Length: 148
Image (cartoon, rainbow, N blue to C red; front, side, top):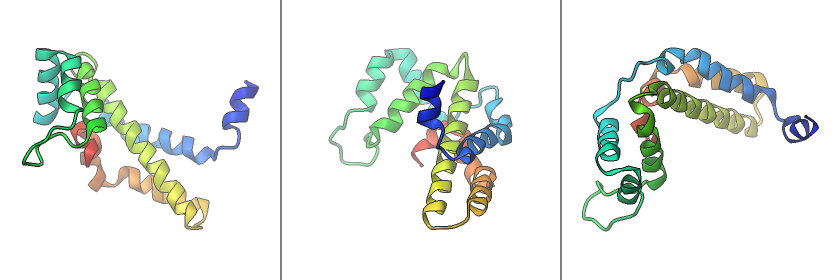
């Protein structure tokens, strides 16, 4: 327990609150029974048909091409492939990962506001508004938008 306190004892408790708030505020997205876009279904189809290792080889290696359709975001495509493994039986994991990612972005937003010297209360309220802002909800509910 003392190791935990030494590692995390000095961390601003608002980060934990921001993550918890994102889960509670977006619980409807998390509980989504598995609505996925054609992009997500395409990745799932690739994993099912050719296997995960083939997917990783196809989507995370840079290929020379004449258009922007070539994979240029290997980490994002890797994450999509990992999430595809859960889409059929455990869609809640896919949606929870998207909400947690959004919560982490809200924590980064909070940290940036603090870095500019604003009060903690204003930074916290700004981060919470960021979480529930309707302009960002679409990309949170769509795991294929993690690149956006």
